[in-house]
Image (cartoon, rainbow, N blue to C red):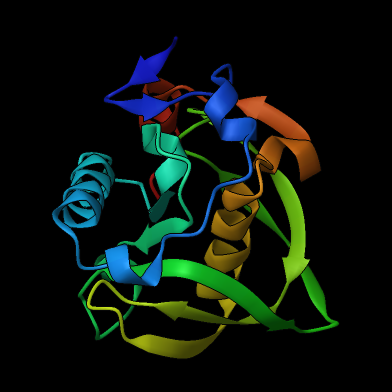
Length: 172
């Protein structure tokens, strides 16, 4: 098994599993609270990380967390339990993507410009959230993780860019 700071990498079978729903009665359980904390810790440990799904830390449950720093004014991490994609726009946009589970690989992925999900938060409260731009892209990327799909399955022009190369590049 290859791990980078406790985050599963592409060769680990769990990333190809379809994640199981969390029982609603379990959402506020110590087990799920510990899992969410572990996910947030793994995400916080990666300065360029925008979100993480439970399979990426070795647990095949339908949970993902979006880092608050990417949510504008909110600043609080967005926890999505049992997320369901409600709608996506017909208009698509091709954007650069990377993944904490395919570390240092980047490629272009075509995703819907807008997406809407329904999920439960860590307190068991159901919510609906629409998104455009980066957040819509994040929703789609993380939902793929819950279905055992990696961005590299959809990406074109995938290249490896090591951190030292990123730092050596132009600083515009």
